[in-house]
Image (cartoon, rainbow, N blue to C red; front, side):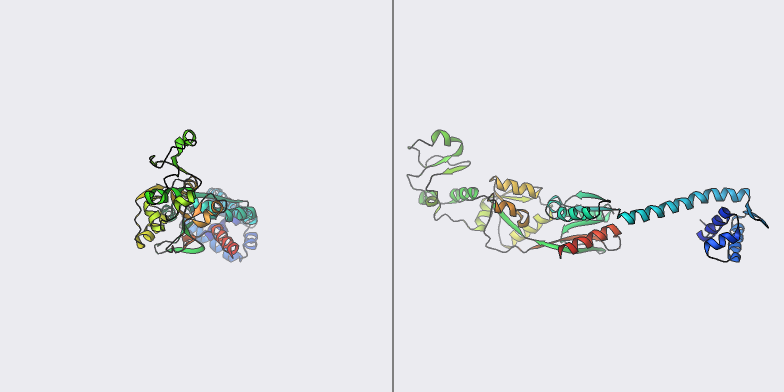
Length: 349
């Protein structure tokens, strides 16, 4: 568009009113300024747009053609302005968030619940992916903000801390007892008159007083009433439990897994058996049914611990806390996303 939009606006108002004086009054400019603008537009387009008379102005054929298109354009602009005012009045907008499944369930949902209640007209979309994929979506402008654990970011992206989380290891007492029994010195710690049987044979063999500890011990074990005596002296360290047990971790590409791997390596812990799972909630559930020892976030498993479904493994080394926060492009934050961030941080105070 070669012409200044202001020239087209002046032309539009003159054509609509049919009078230069009225157009000047509506535009809050002088009549000479209106006439000068029309003359410049005519000279630039190479067409006479108005036939002037004492009664006012009348559009030429070329002027009518230009007016038809400009009328559609300016009406579209007015419609857009009305839509924006309406959206602002109702608090409408769009918010695209990237987040992992676990962070979404255990952290983001609580903020969204109250935010949506106060801003019911905001359209929200959620992309559930691991941290690295969330960052890629942000780079591709497919999300507005991401909720992630703190990690190294490229220049131009900003991370604002929201809260801290603590990694921990959980299992069941039954699994821990069985692991310690399996790894202990059975000849030293299991009396001859104690009964240890395989779970699948328990119903048929529970009344057989001739059963002794020579039975192969595989699978889930049931202990006799004196199991505390059996286990006395069989105390595995945290390091031994993590190395000898079935350690359940997130997949290797997950930022939480990378963090824990580095932590284990720093304390010279080398797990012998690892079960990889791509979802932390499944890790928690698998730990609760006695499949092994799971590395999870303590804040996500609190109810399981309180209900006695899992126990927290006593740690003989420190796992530093991690920070969860929002990441976004520094110069590409829309008003709805900014409003949500302000709400989250004020809610956290």
